[in-house]
Image (tube, rainbow, N blue to C red):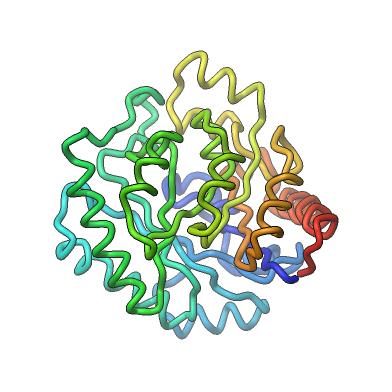
Length: 297
């Protein structure tokens, strides 16, 4: 059984912090991704928003477009307002033959604010859950009708971060609402990430693979650092370079007939972690793990 291996351009340049690799040409990202063995790369801010140019670049470097991050403000909008707001992103993904619509609600998010501690992240109030789930269900249905299924990204610093958040979210949304499973964000949130994968595998349609440097992880939690300061210190890295064992996770995916993308997405400072070196390190580790668990690429 085959699985698809891709990478996110955040290894080369960070959309939220232009000083981190902002001067790196998109062609360099694509060339490195191809040279490392990947067959796909997610959409990032470095890409021009012209589908013709993007298609040309992807074809030049023999890469496909799995999907791309959309930062939503659904908590403070109606479903209709959000649907209007996401049209440009949706149309671009459709023209690029992407597989999923990566959706994260950044309403009140602290992920980019170095003055906000991890403990200060926003949370949905009890009375908000029903209306929020209803809005998500409406958008999920409409995106499915467009042939672009939602992949909701649980993410540090946002309203869906903890294991409890994920459970409540999955229980209150419909079967057209899929989860983007991110190992690093779940571990950083102190979730049982293996349990989350087992419980919701039938509604997981996209996987982000990152690893955690345990010493920096513990220091971030102990000192209640900001998310930004945590990743600048190096809490995230590529699979095989941290403390997460991917073998049981890939085994679950294989036994559940998962055939979609595994995307290495590990935001680091490119001056400290050479993007090509780490892309190859992550690819080589994941390739061995998926091969040992029955997959081919």
